Image (cartoon, rainbow over all chains, first blue to last red):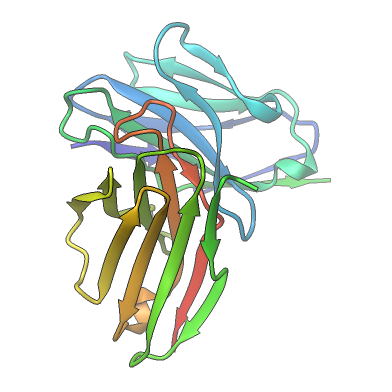
Length: 117
Length: 114
């Protein structure tokens, strides 16, 4: 079975500071990895995804994430945040073809990022 | 506009009421999903439909009844709900079940059971 752990439930930062949102996962098979963002009163929007290839993936709004297979991590980073980045961020995992959780996205509990002026 | 439209955006219903949530996508996707998002809990997958057939039912109580009449529409019929069913209900779609592109989500229906 898959599981996703987001290590911080809330992350407060000041505007223009760097930020890292941590995500660890467990799975018995190879996985696809995703980060989603949810703004207040909205659904989830895909930020970026890791499917294969380069372990550093870049997404929208200046975010990037690095897949570390040995540490089973997929941390999200941004070098300089803006007020508009205030939102809840979700890490998610899906088994590659053949896993028991194939086709199902399993989400972490979310991290609320609050950017202060 | 995300490509997945959910109606209504907000719904307040009594425990004896019957109501339905609607989800519509015009992305040409073949798989659709219902998720429940409660405060301080991870998103819970409720139902999965692939090519209009239900392929997953994650031990959801029978007071929730899904319907997928075609690949563009998904409903969640609600009856005799409990206050703990109050949550944000999210619909999502993907090209196919297991597609590596992830899901496209709607904006959700905020349900309050009184």
